Length: 103
Image 1 (cartoon, rainbow, N blue to C red):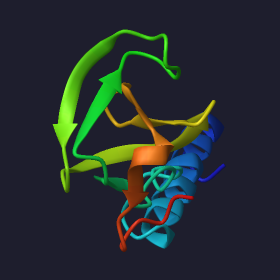
Image 2: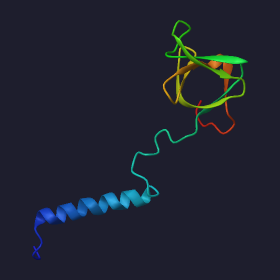
Image 3: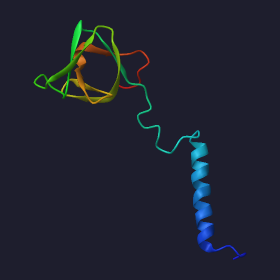
Image 4: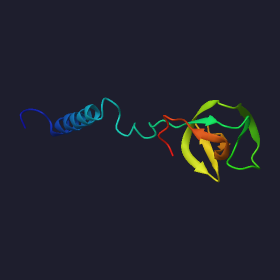
């Protein structure tokens, strides 16, 4: 077929479609916008215990001071929000920042 192997045409077609999808997505890989929303918390307690898991019985791994801001995940379990580093804080003593898009 015009001197170009069919296999070569398939490869060129797939690469072309992937390139168009990349450009349509604003130059980012498809699916890279997952979790791109901002999720940050502000500590409202004087001192907040940061735990290794979601629960009062989980070991305390560190503390945070009032008004400290931390990156968080949208995940909430048993009244605890997961921070971006996979540690947990009680939702009772934190508030989402004004620019957070997580709930």
